[in-house]
Length: 594
Image 1 (cartoon, rainbow, N blue to C red):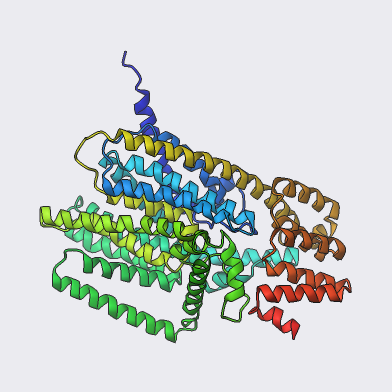
Image 2: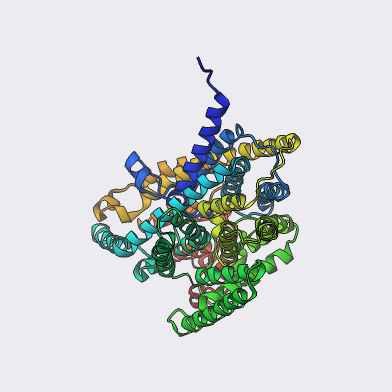
């Protein structure tokens, strides 16, 4: 009787588990991390688990399972580039802890570090598996392709039917509840029909498409050689796939993504060993396309305003880094500091500078800056080197590696103008594509010491990821219950009118017990009390929120409103003054003072 090989079973389980996570990443983990004031929707049954995007706090637990199973996979020689990339992934996690040192709100630091540790833990799992056998690389390329096609289908469904369904649902809910259902940026995207598929933001979906499109195109090209005749198959399928991707990319409305794809392609042709004429043609085409795109943007209704605002974010982030080079401002405090120094007279205040490098630099200091630069640069440098080596050896350009490199460069450029860092799907697929790009060394020299260190570091990341992940999840679920209870959008006017103060206080007590440092349950309950005309309770709750988030001007403005209603005009004036000090260029605040 043949004995059971448990190690082989564990290895196959590890590969299948990580393969499954890779496949569902763009479908289930396209949401944003680090928005503690607005918890995501948590599925309440199996059908919702299938249909809904999963909340980011689920990801640390999947990453932990993938990492533990990956420890059964053997690889003998890691290679220099791969070792450096492993180091950069770990550095990303541990330097993120600097974001605790000056953070004024505990929630932001806890959520962000939990998020980054889980990304790094999954990166270790994927790296271990993809460093062992080339067959696994092929399997994971197929998983990335399948996930991308499913995302495209989701995007097309949204474009042709989804927007109208949401608009109709929103209209029905507004009639049902009497409350405004969609507002702010979501309303803008909905009525402009900007496609986001299963991602929270259309810009993040666009960044993901820039990352995977070149690889998917190469995989279709490679598949066509199995079709007879291959040239005809390529003439049919390559244009079809290109149009399918580029149409949805255009419908995201992300100008930065289109620019990043063009620039990534142009840069790749310049630095790789292509024919000189082909390089010049690619460069000329890229420059001409960028100029034409800039002209189109200038003539459009959107213009360059959002780009000007991005530059303001960057300038502010650099100032924050220079003021706190060792520790940064702390996670979440770009949000608070930016409101004090922004130039534009608007009430907008982003949670991040929309730049992956400056996000770490401004909030974690020099250590975070070095870690993120190493993380981004390692696969790009290693990819260029590997392609040149392949060309020197074989006299041919390796188009698989080239497609991976174009996607990685494009995504990196896009991440310098958007919040891809906050999206598990985007960062994890960047990591997986980087490991696919690295060569597996032919030498079989044992790497026992490196593997021991890798395992020890991974276990340390696992412990923190699970510890922080459980805290984040319990806090989010308690807050989600409170938000749901106080949200008038899913209740009739009569049901909302019947909702008692005592019931809200009961759920608030649970949320505060789970998350005593958090200001957001207090602020949510205060908003509810305001809607009920319970001004004394609302004032008390806004005061509790401001104690836990003393840099947030909106809490002082809310105190101003409620105290004015109570006739406490002196206190109201002091709180309005404080709100203006913290957010001097908010026109709503300044107009009231005048």
